[in-house]
Length: 139
Length: 105
Image (cartoon, rainbow over all chains, first blue to last red; front, top):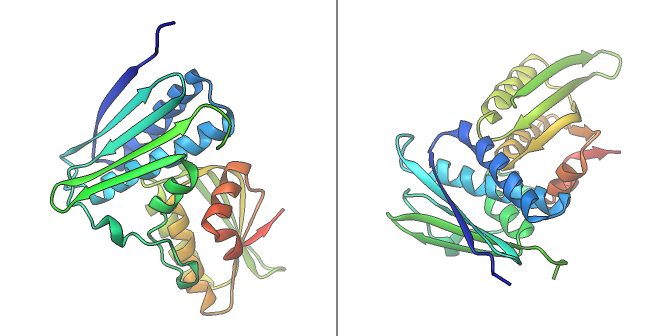
């Protein structure tokens, strides 16, 4: 049996109007792979949050950010990279809702919805978020 | 898909009824924020959001709701959300926002 190992790469302008395009794209990919509706929704929300981060922290709207989908029989891996200013990942805290802060929920949502999340950020070089969703039952 | 916001002030209940239809994301969150600022400037009363036609909301949209709640709390007013789709309810659960807003139904 031949193993699937497909990659799709997109380069997207740092503009808010394109996040919905990524949402539709990732929904179509996850649907084609056979994810159930709830998992498709999780993936869609998580990827959109990563794209929102890339646009918010990206350098400017003339730049592009990059989304890569890696597809195999077991899982979908999505990588979202920006070339923004980067951040100190060890300073990302879980949100404290009693403070009613308006930001800081994005990464928390991504980590809650995906099976595996890695965030690499270099000050001045940008941020890469790699997230994985497995096709099988929840672990 | 974009966002449609319909506002009505219900005199007998003394609160705003806001109908949200479509998607709130980084592209449309600004529109929602402006609408809330106007509403609260007009009358600082509790806001009851009908989310039946709200298909999607992300962290920027939730941030706008949190910002509006912060202003309303100063006057002991609240944000009530009802008719929520399961996918959005899940998001409110995992973020703990279901304990911050009043969720009905």
